Length: 200
View 1: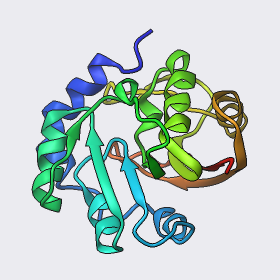
View 2: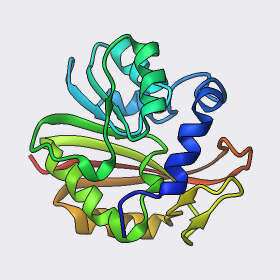
View 3: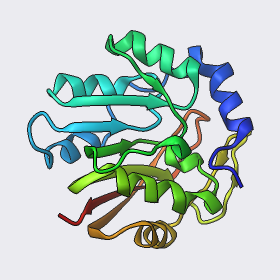
């Protein structure tokens, strides 16, 4: 199976103006404590940057941010917000090797079909420098499927997330935080945030 879902990409392309103008009043809630772990000026790859809110926050903190999104319409919006280029790149096109101090994927990797998730997480691991950090947030639930808007989600349980990450690379540490939150569809439900560090 491909590492992306065509219907989900089409949804974000068609909904980009509304999606990027609504919902977020600030950065991903786990982002600030995550950034506190990084050295000043660290190079950060952002996957699925959406409207560029988190990229703007990281840039304001003085980090070297490389924002990407798999949907051109999203990338254009983010580019306008942050005033610097945003690359159009799907997760399966990531081929960097030990290039970044951190990889941030807020509400992004949750769309990767499960049978491709291991490959994508392996790409994240390879993109990190030794000792580099990665954070990603996922809608939880345990059963892969679609929401009422037709978007595909892998809906990982904490145990499933840990298994996928453990199999994808040699991590020095792995933390999973569970919470309840909302989304663009207006529904409240379980979320998890996964924070990992690559062995130095």
